Length: 154
Picture 1 (cartoon, rainbow, N blue to C red):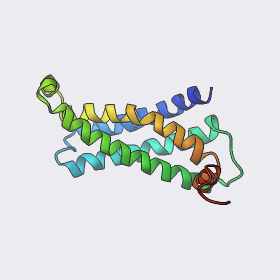
Picture 2 (tube, rainbow, N blue to C red; picture 1 turned 90 degrees about the horizontal axis):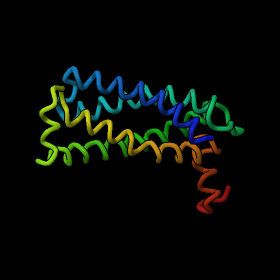
Picture 3 (cartoon, rainbow, N blue to C red; picture 1 turned 135 degrees about the vertical axis):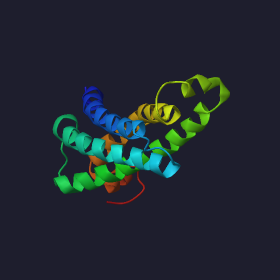
């Protein structure tokens, strides 16, 4: 049940994220790799706000920490998710540039490879995001996670 609720929460956040990024890409915002990364980061921040609010309220049980401590953990996990998404997106842009995917470049869209790579990266990183938020953001934070794994003493 938790993963299904997370999919709904993350789904709403993903719609916000994707809509924002796709709008930026459609308007030519991906003309350089830095702008492409910036578009992904801006979309992730918008989605993160939606995801934190919905996850805290509907998905994960609250731990004993104050909301701002959960938000700090959530932000750090989301930052790792964003970095992973950037790596995956740029890797997918390279893969999609291979001749076998040449048809993507023929689509009547601005930045077709970047748009497809962004969608693929969002999907591939979602499962990591769920488990990281479940075990870190809403389960006592990174120190509690490491303590449970025997890496640090509480």
